[in-house]
Image (cartoon, rainbow over all chains, first blue to last red):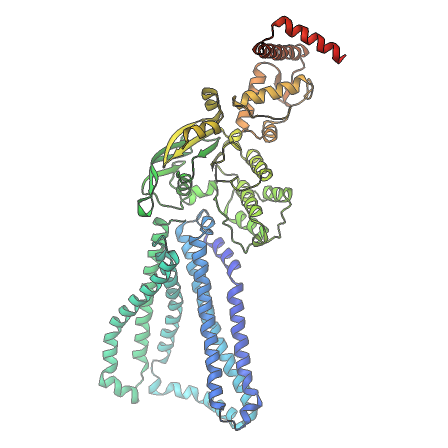
Amino acid sequence: MLGKLLKHEWKAVWKVPMLLIAILMITAVMAGLTFALPIWDSEWVGLPLSGIMLICMFYFAIIAVTVGIMIYFAVRYYKNMFTDEGYLTHTLPVTARQLLLNKTITMSAWNLIAMLAVVISIFVFFAIMILSLAPKDSSFTRELMETIRAWPEVLKSPYMDGFEGFCIGGLLVVLIGAFSNSMMLIGAITLGQMVRKHRILGAVGAYFGLTIIVQIFSTVIMIPMMVKMMDSSYYDSAYGAQSPFPILTSFYFLVAGVSLVLGIGLYFMSEYLIRHKLELE
Amino acid sequence: MNALVEVINLTKIYEKKKIALDHMNLTIPRGKIIGLLGPNGSGKTTLIKLMNGLLEATEGEVLMNGHRPGPQTKNWISYLPERTYFHNNMRVDELIRFFCDFYQDFRPERARQMLSNLNISENAKLKTLSKGTKEKVQLIMVMSREAQLYVLDEPIAGVDPAARDYILRTIITNYNENATVLLSTHLISDIEKVLDEVIFIRNGRVILQDTVENIRECRGKSVDAYFREVFAC
Amino acid sequence: MAWNLNSDRPIYAQILDVIQLRIISGRYRPGEKIPSVRDLAAEAGVNPNTMQKALAELERNGLVVTQRTSGRMVTEDMDMIQTTRNKLAREQVSEFIDKMKELGFSKKEVVELFERMGGEDA
């Protein structure tokens, strides 16, 4: 049954986020292509400012698309589960766990796809920018190639110790973040249902409440880490020959762990509320 | 065999202490078409939602074939809510596939037959249909299942007389002898000929459960007339 | 002979009357198969169990017979149909006379009135 739920969910949702991602890609290409315009060869004083504005606009497009996708899924979850559409959702012969897993998996997957799309769009933007600028300055291409060629050497330096672990930690943060961000929305919306008369307000309130709690909690957990970072020996090492990555890696693992615990906690809370406290209007 | 539905001491109190069901006890047999009758706010919809697991009881329970509402009971209960509840972006044929996938007792050929009888296109998107047509599509989907229990909440409210006849005929022709149809309404005169039994509820309690023929025989009046007498203001 | 089931009497009794009338008037011929319970119920807009009850009653008084292979049929016993017809006619007449009595007519006056009107019609 979970498979069937996932199949129908996927069929129903792919269009809107794909459209948003397509818009992001087009924005990336267009932003990159502007570097090919002849104005960049002129002596106009506003050039640096225009460049910053362009990058800012691209940045906003990225934010708009990722936030847009999450809002789309949040609204869909709310409508599917707690409005008139809930009459169909909750009379399917499936368990509360299957319903919630379906939503969690789909939302996390699209969250990841959105992040991946952002990475690709940034890559596309810079690639096109480089290709646009290259013909104007031949030394630019040569320097770029040299930097890339030198990269393996850089990795070998003691300063880069633990870089692989750092990458794995980062990846873990991204993967678990996709899940825990989804659970923040799902958990907040589900919790908001307990305010029977003002369900949307309840959901928004619960989201901010949860965010604040998470912030406070993570700050408390981070304190030892901060202290360590402030520690003079670490401070020295960061500007010395020693690698900063091991400590950043442990920081990542801590974030990942906290996110995982948070996501799982919110999942079970939501499942409990749907199973035992459902009350459709 | 035990009763199809048993309502035991069922109580539902909403927020602000609004009592919708007040220690209700009720037994619903198999193979009958039963009217759940009562004025607005008497608790009809609350009872139906509890049977379908859309609410949690404050006290007591409702058992269907001995089970509380859950995935098994949803397998053989076909429920028509009193509102339009399908996803507006779906096409009618997508809806048929959706029902096929989730309900093993769904008979797509039956649904297609009824849709073509009513000249409803399978390619139509639900949001392009009028409210009345949407309600017909909903009834068709619900009646195209071979369920043990059909729960129809106000199926004839707000439709024109021709559609009302079609709906009643659909119910008569599609239900089988082992299935029970429970339908709630406050428009009794139109449906009493279709019913075996009626249940009168008021203020969250059952005040009468009897067969239509018995009421007519013993009271010498139609159920509609009797209802007006019982619930006279 | 349409399904006019609007009185406050039990519905099965009203259905019974309609089917009886259909048989007597020849709409359902002797030996002809009667539509299924479900079809009749849908046509009349009544509960199938009620229709079933009415047909069972007709079976009991012999107007309808059930054959294992071909379902329910109208009896081929013409006497039986004739008897029912006479019985219903007597019921109608006595009901009519009762009403006339309420209007203050004696039985004799009723017969006279009847004959006079019969003559006018002819």
